[in-house]
Amino acid sequence: MAEAVSTGLLAVVLIAAVVRPWGWPEAVIAAPAAVIVVATGAIDPHQALGQAERIGPVIGFLAAVLILAQLCDDEGLFRALGRWLGNGAVPPRRLLARVFAVAATVTAVLSLDATVVLLTPVVFAAAARLGARVKPHIYAVSHLANSGSLLLPVSNLTNLIAFAAAGLSFPRFAALMALPWLAAVTSEYVVFRRIFRSDLYAPARPEPAADPIGVPWLVVTLLGATMAGFVVTSLAGVNPAWVAAAGAAALAARGLARGQTNPRAIWRAADGAFLIFVVALAVVVAGVTDNGLAGALQRVMPSGSSLWALLATAALAAAAANVINNLPAVLVLLPLAAPSGPGAVLAMLIGVNIGPNLTYTGSLATLLWRRVLREHGEEPGVAEFTRLGLLTVPLALVAAVVALWTGLRVIGG
Amino acid sequence: MIVITWIVEGTWPACVDAAGAVAPADAEIVLLHVTGGEAPAAARGAYAGLMGRRRPERDPGARVAELGAVSARDLLEAAAGRLGRPCATAERRGRTEREVVAAAEGADLLILARDGDDTRLGPRSLGPASRFVVDHAPCAVLLVWPREVPAGPLPPPPGPGHRPPLRPD
Image (cartoon, rainbow over all chains, first blue to last red):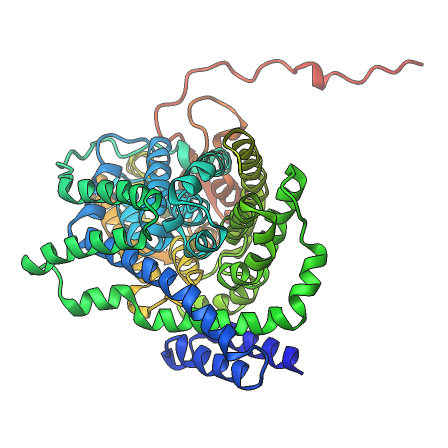
């Protein structure tokens, strides 16, 4: 009974999160669902409270990073990146290499949200300005938002959730994920160069643009200091979320003083309703996993940290991310992967982070998402995107897991 | 006589020059550009993946679609400027290769550029889109090299793979 109720509620919450009926925030459906899960006794109130205590600080961390990204945009960081991408007589092949470098770095430092929302239009504008065909570059940004999000805990919400639970420090996470990140990005690049060969051979505009790039050095320095701060606080046993908050506060103070932003814009970047949504989702997911799903998954979840176990874990995680979405997938799989140690948790993250390149949002959401696109009068082009995913995802997954396994043997789990 | 000139990013100047050279003075030249829906769709799709944190006003797909419309207009304007004689422009949206074939219906000539590897003579000089258009065009086609015709050997003699198989008996 409890299992049926929780499963049904999870389905309702996930569908509502994709469709967003009447434009409601996702929390409007998710919060009552979480209350019902607790009220029907599917999980006990203490456990629900435990979920909230675990997830709350993670979302606070993400909110600080999202504010930081928005303020970097206000300060002109993304405009400068766009000018650099389109600067000089850049042939399309070199533009693709630049797009890969920028998208992988922005995703790693400022999270995939920043890449999707803030970098995508900038890349489009730069490609159009160069007279290049935009498709390979836009596909590259949307792919790297996922596969470029392996490096740091702040790169992806999935990493933040798992990082807190896996007992890894910030620098240790980065050290173990550096090779997988490079391997994933490189394998994507190799496939892109081949698939989009004909678009990338087309000549670029003959007359090069040479606008001054105008690097906002203050923002770059502050981001560098924030990254260093993550390492230092993490080693000192302080929650690195405070560093993100401090970085965001410093830029916010400057932005407010100069009239570039206002408190309302900052609050909107942080997205308060999102906190409630994720906590509610975690409670509903716990209702499902504690009432049967965990036992069922335990039987298929590999244990240990051999190369085969890591590959199987990543494959299972990628499949889960494609069936539902990577956010609920990580909530389901984390408690199962954690007992096998950091290697298994990181392999799971490789799966849930790279996996979405196959169907963007999980297949459930993709079905609904195609409907959204038709409302906008756009042909989804799912066949081409899926073909690209089929070529890149397995290769990137295997390359990243092998790199992780190598790192674990060199650095130690 | 109606001459459709397919304007594609990167390779369009060669097509415009060819249209100017071959179209008779009384021909109607139409500069055609097609905006594929892939870029806004990819941006919207990636945004849809950010479960729980989508707000309609932040959707990058809308911004990308806007930028696409502006860049298409600029491109057609630049092409008309380069042609330097009266012409019509047409902007279509949808599956690029199919839209081009549909637009060529009733035309006398379609001018397009090779969109593949143009650094050497060979089979890779046509990409998937221009391959489709050449195969399906309902009119005469003028296929131009986007840059100068690459120097290079004419088709090499058949390699070992082309020899008839040896039969042991």
